Image (cartoon, rainbow, N blue to C red; front, top):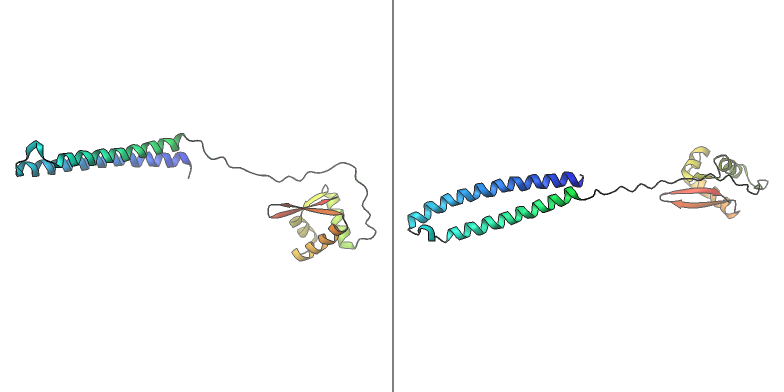
Length: 163
């Protein structure tokens, strides 16, 4: 829930509490008036002091709720940080890759990388070659050992880049 909505909710609860405090205060006043006048205490009844303390304490609590609600309403909402992973397509001239000593799957990986702009997500590579995780990982390990590609970690994914 948004901070402003919570703030308005807290303010609404504070207003309801004000009404409850005053209704409760009036009911206590009626009870004390009836009780103290029958006991003969009149205006010097000790319960009047207790009622005023309870009312003041309740109003302080409601005041705190109003401050918290106002703070939440006026506070800046949390900004959502969205991180986008962008694969840059490198257009600079590279040395041609010697594919003569590569097997057919390795050649397909190099061709796909060249076609995709020299970088691709490992998951996309798996999908395009129709291989499983283990097969792709072993294939990329071989190409990395031959220093043809490089894998870069991006969150839960790898980006495969031509060197």
